[in-house]
Image (cartoon, rainbow, N blue to C red; front, side, top):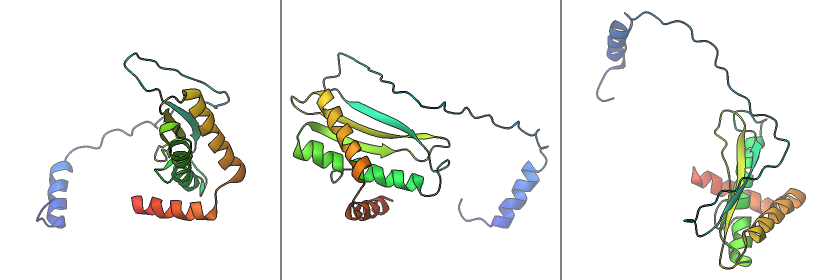
Length: 165
């Protein structure tokens, strides 16, 4: 970095590091593969210091590295539509309209090398029960799976997604 000439830096690097013998070839990297996800699992963590419960539901999905063309992009936009902020379906339905959630959202971790996850989450507000919030989130996910998204939602999600870059 700084005020240098690339040719001079390259010559110095070759002079210094060119003397070092090349090491042995590394063996191929063995990457563990996620086992097939064919059953539902529930993990419950409790701590007396936690006063507001919350939950998350995760699905194993392809990442940008493993997805077919368009799949990861669709998951990113789905996360934006379903739970990407105060204009999302989950926020509008559960926080604004029903008033049963203090927070609700979704996200997609698409940058992993292998399979990754798509997550929806929420925390109840007031007297709302965690089970009621989970049921409401599941209903919204089922609704989007059954009816899809509108063209307006998709265009707005694309705009928000691009602006967030």
